[in-house]
Length: 87
Image (cartoon, rainbow, N blue to C red):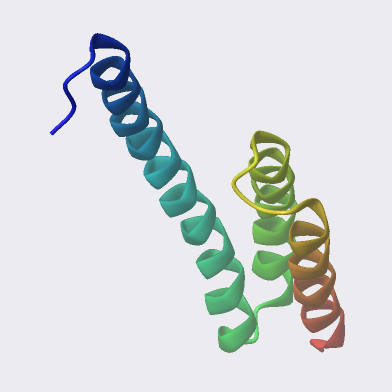
């Protein structure tokens, strides 16, 4: 357990930041999953719309430090390639 007031404060900040990051990560995964389900369903129009919504989420999370920038770009690229390959 933390003894110093500064370490107690740091612990509180970490808990807050962890909760925010968990929320952002969950939201990002939801958007990506929507694209995945549209691709699996074979619905190109829905997949394109879902991808358009997922892209900003991925890049925003990269900007916030939740993902590396290149990881976000790679995921977007791979999803876009899969959407393009549909019908």
